[in-house]
Image (cartoon, rainbow, N blue to C red; front, side):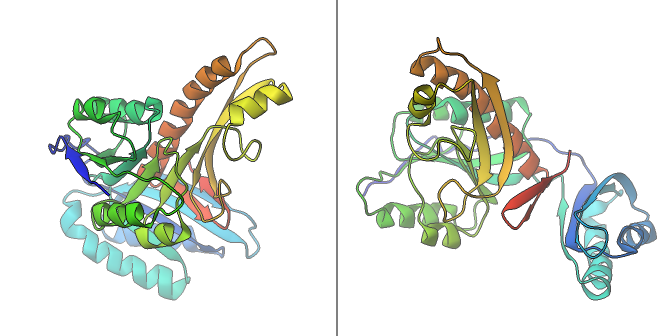
Amino acid sequence: MSLTQHAPALPAEVPAAADQAVLIVHGKDRTGIVAAISAVLGKHDANIVSLDQHSDNPHGGAFFQRTVFSKPGLKAALPAIEEDLREQLEAGFDLEYTLRDLSVPKRVAIFASKDGHCLLDLLWRHRRGDLPINVAMVVSNHPDLADEVRSFGVPFFHVPSQGPDKSAAEAQHLRLLAGNVDFVILARYMQILSGDFIERAGVPIINIHHSFLPAFIGAGPYAKAKQRGVKLVGATAHYVTEDLDEGPIIEQDVVRVNHAHTVAELQRHGADVERAVLSRAVHWHAEDRVIRHGNHTIVFP
């Protein structure tokens, strides 16, 4: 087992809205939730910038809400706001919530193998300021992309992972991730993660699958698609669970193809869709627009 680091310099953080926070609330629907949240924010002279909500059944179903609010001197005010929200939401309504300062980008690790189109697209979007994240590291089971990642000023770690026993590689991964990231992106990382690793990582993991799930799961989806004579190829971004390619779906998209397209052409069209779908999923997760509920998601625009 070898562990090689390249380009230790960290990239500049993507600037985010100053003095703005996002509040995510979910739990059992009941009367008065929106009013209670608004009252707490109003008590602290916080201005609601946007508010999106969804109920899957207004008569005791599940309730979901995303609220963005602003307040001058937010960092100093957040502890008091959170204390009042906790009293209202946990005691008064038995709701779960998260509250986050939007000026602090989420830290992410990107895992990749030899295919660099999704990885390099994310790094490019990040450098342009299109993704509100801080890329803490890139981890790969191959060294092929080290120079390209180095050009973005992002640390690159080569952790070989060969054979059926991935425990040594996963132990290295866990040491790299511990306390350093808020979520992980699998940008065409062609390795299956163990359930133990997923649990011990302790952060959400987003995968891009090169087909329109649930069709063509597993390896070689474009060859399978060609054999079936499909008229659409697509991609699916989803959260990783122990069940392969069956985690909650965040985003999907497709592009039309026809009988004349070769497998290579299907792959090229598919790569374009993969880049777009993964970047949207990462952006939405980074802005707390996605709420997991069972094996599906609520994605606020």
